[in-house]
Image 1 (cartoon, rainbow, N blue to C red):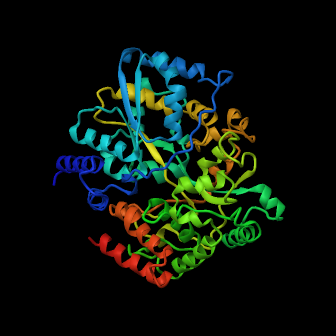
Image 2: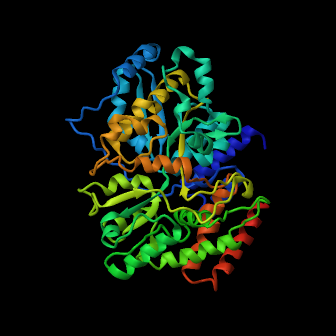
Image 3: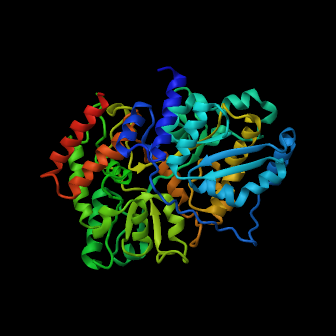
Length: 496
């Protein structure tokens, strides 16, 4: 199958799934064969974005940035650009709060479609296959990077090819190196620039921790001991920990990786065979069993949404999970825990494998990440106008506004974390940024990334979480039996 035929077939597979003509398991197997990673499925995550802008807010885009937009956009006035994106904090903030500033300065219209993730993939694959250029910009989940890398512009190429359109001080070196390497780099190309970075951090009820004389957990074992003490003391009204452990759901796989990596294990070994059933993998399962006993009874029916709500409503006292929930927890109009939560780095791993000790580019780390990139399509009818918008949407000033006005997002640029407008929001209240130093440190020191192989879509959305769900439902005699079953199924799929 040549490259053109493969793109057409890929688009047909995704389209059939979205339209209900193909079941989930068949779709995952086709996606694996077509090189689409874990993000092929709409995961159902309700991103906790809230707009905290008001009519009194003094925060507006830089006059110098808008002057540059106006100066370079003259030839493109009247152009309409289109982007299909998942509901992420950056996309929502741009669409609802900031886009009109760009449109007024540039004369360029921007249409942003906020869709479930599988529909974003549907639009992207159809556009690539048809080469119609319906969409000028692509939102790219990290798991799609390999399959679309040649269908988008490397932003470094655009800077070199269009010096007259290059934003002054755009500075690609300001994007956090770990995010470039883990999200936007494929082989020797940048597949866009880092755009969004959900990542695991530790979030806990400081009032409860103080009452019991605890400090932030420094090790995984200490985290378990503290969670058990809270459940023993305060349960069933309050449980010490919580999780995202719904059987068959990608969220369950996300939790598993954190405990696996944190116990010195890995999904694959250097021989590219499943390694989660080795000594470290079984130690992780033993730990998870104990931690599970400190969680609310409903945890095995929850994805990340239920997990977040269990903390927000005061049912659970802590979670090691997505950092973008933290600003939501601080909103007194939405939760019962405003001002009570504290952020910290995840507990230290007991051991940590190196990249050389894993397979398929897996990077062990307790800070499980799931980021995305933004790129200009090579099929765009207006690539120069799209490049102007992309620079504006991902520049330092716009990232500051996204973070300060929209809340909930970890910036992908190093400099944004130290901006006075971000530091000013380092206080208790809706849209807080008081967790962001923890996010930055986690990206630099604790970030974990899943393996990069075509079959990962099927493995992470079906094979692994289905069997983990069966384990927690009591359908295996032991953790070893469950992990050996996962190993057999995984190695069979990987070997083709």
